[in-house]
Image 1 (cartoon, rainbow, N blue to C red):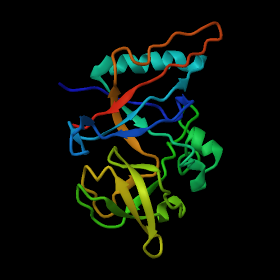
Image 2: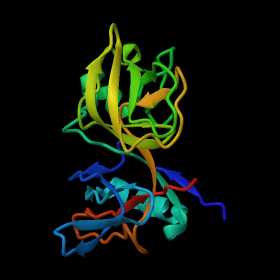
Image 3: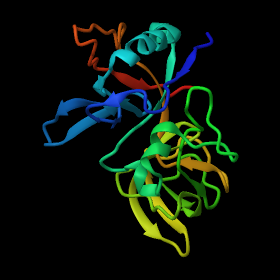
Image 4: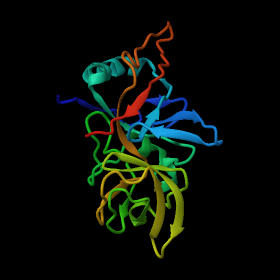
Length: 230
């Protein structure tokens, strides 16, 4: 079955809380007589999140349309994993207008909707890294020298990972510890998104259904889980 993929527009959802986390898919088998505990891992780890968002009058109809395009749990949502406390995009040197409206073309033009190309800061892979690696090297020249920080969520080819340590390796190259271990190989020069991007499905039927009051505002709670098989 071909699943529809819906990419949420940049800066569309005004996130009120952030709780992205890795679900390691473990189940406790209980305590044993010798004083040990045992845990069973029942599947591949995946990212989960339940962001609560605020929708104004201008976003209500668009969100309904996005949900309709996703066709319930059949669809896949491509989501930018905003994490402003750990990685504020402005730290890369971009101004508020560029972050909110996007970058104009080389000629200074915007699209007819008044927006430009999405500002998506990235680093480049400094070497080849196999799937399963728990450390990678990146070149930060392309992001105005911004160095990733511990706890930051980054991604490669829509596979998110979290930075666990940062070590300088000379010049603009840094070594990053990552978890989960890489789920796809990375080649020299590949783009690594500094703000992680992942593909998710609704965790339950009817997720994101909205009702609004006289103020024409809604605050649905969304529940996403990563799609591990692609």
